[in-house]
Amino acid sequence: MNWFLLTQLLANGLIVGMLYGVVAMCFVLIYKSTQVVNFAQGEFLVLGAWVCLAMVVKAGLPFYIAFPFTLVFMTIFGILIQTVILRPLIGEPIISIIMVTIALSIIMQSILNWTFGNSSASFPQIFPVENVSLFGLQVETAYIMSLVLSVFVMALFYAFFQYSKYGLAMRATAYDQQAAQSLGVSVGQVFAMSWAISAVVSGIAGIIIGIVSGVSSSLAVIGIKVFPAVIVGGLDSIVGAIVGGVIIGLLENLAEFVDGQYLQWGNLYTIAPFYVLIIILVIKPYGLFGTRDIERI
Amino acid sequence: MLLQVDNISLSFGGIKALQNVSFSVDEAELFSIIGPNGAGKTSMLNCISGRYTPDEGSIKFAGEELLGRKTSERPEIGIGRTFQNLALFDHMTVLDNIMVGRHHLLKNNFLTGMAYWFGAQKEELEHRRHVEDIIDFLEIQHIRNAQAGTLSYGLRKRVELARAIALGPKLVLLDEPMAGMNMEEKEDMARFVVDLNQELGMTVIMIEHDMGVVMDISDRVMVLDFGAKVCDGLPDEVMANDHVQKAYLGAEFDDDIEADTQKEVA
Image 1 (cartoon, helix red, strand yellow):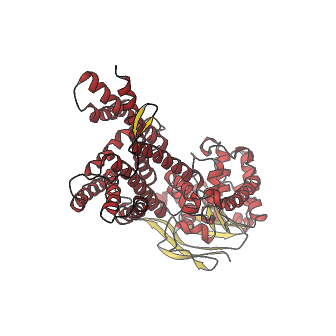
Image 2 (tube, helix red, strand yellow; image 1 turned 90 degrees about the vertical axis):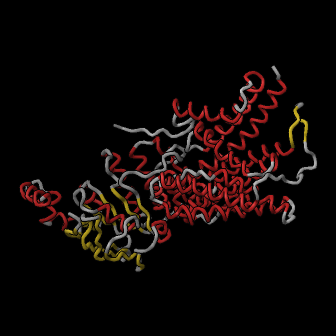
Image 3 (cartoon, rainbow over the protein chains, first blue to last red; image 1 turned 180 degrees about the vertical axis):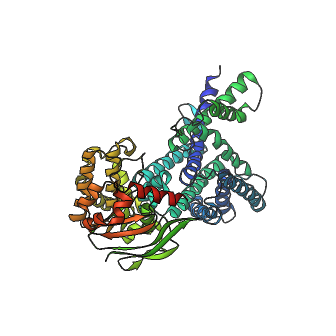
């Protein structure tokens, strides 16, 4: 057994899993507060990454300026999507809204390909050192940044929901819109805010992955990987999203290990999460942390 | 005059929930609305709180027209409410539930909220103090940090009242605050409603089925039946009204009620 490879892959899995967790969190945030399943989550990542890259490469801005600008751009983008596209759909059947987010995903894909091209591009080197040695493992600096940023974003999420006025209002709205309204919470504002936060954080994740493995439309795959993560954790649990993300990240890399060392089937890496998706849906459809619908008869 | 309701009519499809209802409530009054099930009491409350928009009529609060203003603007205008079927945020603590009531008064926004430790803290402390006063007032200190969903029915009703008071409203709308309670809980709740009216000086509009409590604590009572106003006045006057005896209280008029119901069914 190749222990070195195994630990390397597990470390990889943890770091990638945290990123899945961050994106899954964004997905759950939108679902919880606005009951919309956002199939365009992956494209949000691609958009964030391309916009930041364009600012760095085409406009020649340094990364530390391009990054906050990208976040501002994503905020405005999120609010626009909610107010222009989704607000008029409030009260429509869920299936119509799902169709709209799928359309949004396709349209964004095309526009992004059209604007930024089909081929992949990479960020100029941002960190002076490319690799650092950690406990005998060679880890890319970008990966460490990714881990730190993931944890930071999660902590920020927690603080926001626990301590800020709007976090509290959002939790209240997610549970009972009518009651929240009667207490002076503007539901429209809360909806716009959750899309904005989701877009911004997805943008951050997109930039991180872009730095690590280059920017291309294939980043949108993360948006699909998020589904197993979210289903494992439970559709409406933010903690569940993080745990689910990490589980999927580890599982992928474990599958890669088993496949590469023993089975030699190829591609188990890509499909393993979806086997889990199916198994979870069969045995525990509410996920590990999701709310069970209890029906009293 | 704090609240002036004029000729409110509301219909859902063919059903006339309210027909030309007019009444007014004075400042610091404890005003009750009674009537049989389906009489339109909650619909009336929902019109005032902004959940329903009446087809006709006007509702003026402190001289200002309420219709056309958003539901979420009501707390700023000075109106708070509780719901007939409890609407607490079950997954949050009692304290957080009440803090949501302070939402419209908290000034710290997204960014200063992030900078919690650099200044928003002072404001938060002030609100916490206010919330603590409300908690003391309603005697729910012991459950301050409990998850709202885990509490008994009577306590949950009390927390919901606390949340409505936290808005700092001039007018509170209470939709059956004592429904489903035992005698002891009812007495407590009645005492809180009276204190809230007399000590905190809030104007109260209450829907309640327990006639004993209503007649005891109300300054004035309005009776609704089939969406129309029957009468309003002092509790004694209302009790003496023939139609009230018949439609709402009357055991002696059983036959008439049956005839009425049949007419209604037809």
